[in-house]
Length: 210
Image (cartoon, rainbow, N blue to C red; front, side, top):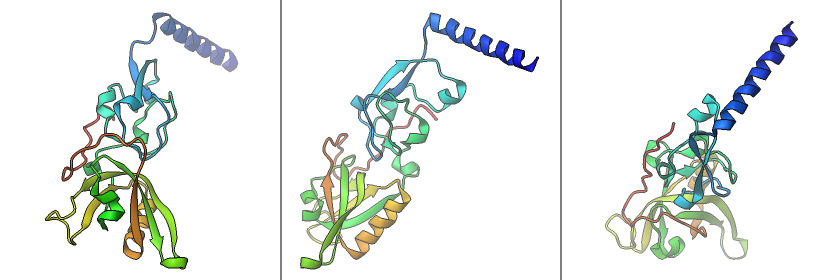
């Protein structure tokens, strides 16, 4: 009897799905237009929409308005065509993504040619001459604020004050250690988008979803 009841419930579910499919999905949700790596600042061409019927649980964590995600941080990789879920997207920096600040020689910070929203890789070099070793400590980190060389906010002449958003706790620890014990150098990531102006703070727009 129990087996018959389960089959009946399954049949009702299949019928409901087929009935909905015949009418076509009426709501569009945001998906990744291509693979989105962790640490990326979302640009308009990173997103697409598809019409699909989602279960209530999935719908609560999904997005319907692509522009509301532009400028957000990708905290976990999202594959091409995959539904963009709230768990993979970071809120505005001011809403909880920790930052690490550092004062770097202009030559180690691309000559100061950085803007809020740029993505950078941070490398640290320990030692000198033949004993020197260099390693990557933070990949695709969004620039939150940056000062120009010689700006009043810079502590040392010829240095650039840079603030990076680092979502991963271990990466933050490694970067802080690098700033205190080594020589940090920044490199821009190819395809950087969403550049702001020096002196501005990187502040993504509010999201429409969760």
